[in-house]
Length: 619
Image (cartoon, rainbow, N blue to C red; front, side, top):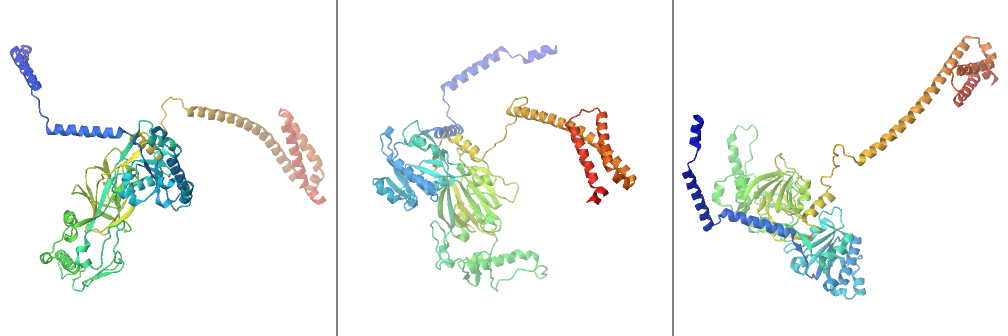
């Protein structure tokens, strides 16, 4: 009965099934006839897929230089051998026509420092080949900054530093494609062997083949922001900031400056407070309540501000308020230090990394890290490294950073010796804007360097902003981006090199070596066993002879000395007879060992005879 009731309950009437099927067919027909609009999230997903596919196509695209006319050679300026090779390469590129393309030789741009170098010998080269005057040009930093479009591609002769220097030359322009040949020590960014230079140049400029793949290496744009000190009345006396490649001041920084009775000095100099400012209380001072220390600090701060900045607002000086470093940093980007607007000093396009460290100071760096104008964390370490995927194998790697593939558009943030156990390196997307700022309450300033060049001091309140550059650096690949990168890891850094674990029961070269060593051990063991048996047999006979001699000597000591002297010769003969008789009784074979033993006994007898009193008397 229970089973029948359960079947009645679970059975669906045929009419209900027919109604559901009709509704389903009607709904499907409605969806097929009426188009449905895409939702915003669907559109975003489709756009993201399209962007990824476009990036994949860019990375796999074959690029062919269409009839290049000019080439720029960047080589080590301090190596005479490379300078001499640069001269030979320039002559080859000028005089060698590209017959497959029906084109003449290239116009070559050489470093201007080579013009007067003895290894290059430009004067003799021009006198011997007069047509080189129009084909052999010289480049400098100004040409790269203003007329970068005149260069079709670049050849580097050196190591990784030469490639980074090439990127540094093109600061505000697109870098031409770079063909890098390995003549350095590491060669992580130099993919080509100098021995294959003719074959590689035919691929690049010889109009042969399908083309080459180019790695668009991401660069970072770093802008240094400081405060406009010219607007302050206390610094108008000849103080000027030169916005050149070196940030210098016209006044001598070693001289102390006096402002309304307050003398300031550089790091390590003394600081003199006026007598009108009350001194802080001593420990155990009962006249002052501990709760008044904060008011005392406010009073000192207001008086210092009043002396250092005469234009301080009276209302703000009447009611001074202490502000923390984060409150100060919240308004620094818009207002600057003490209400002055920060101004950009310089902008650099870097290929490797930006390093912000403590410089010569012995104190730990204190930096505020912002991402998209939001405070991320306070860095308390020796410094901070912001690197590109290309720079992930440089300083960032030494500081414990990760290895980043060059096709991953990201910024790697790596602390240098952080004073915490939880500050780990992290990757940020390339679309973010990063800001590193020195807080107002920092004990010291910070120093920043760009690709290991051009160190600039960041004073309190100064900061540097970092975002992705609009000018990447294209480098010619040997195979493609991925293969070249992994090969560089193995070749230069010996990445994950280890002897492979042997499987159980597999025959390897070690097994044959093991067999050879085992046979050698067995052979040596047999030889040593034979030697030991022969030595033991000889030692047994020798011990018997020595025992007999000891008995004879003890007997001789008991007898009278005179009789021993007279019978010494007969004693030696009888001893020899006894030894021979014992050897014959032992059943041993007669041979060379026994004759040797007999000779040894004769020698010993002669020795005893020589030391006897009779022999001494004869002497």
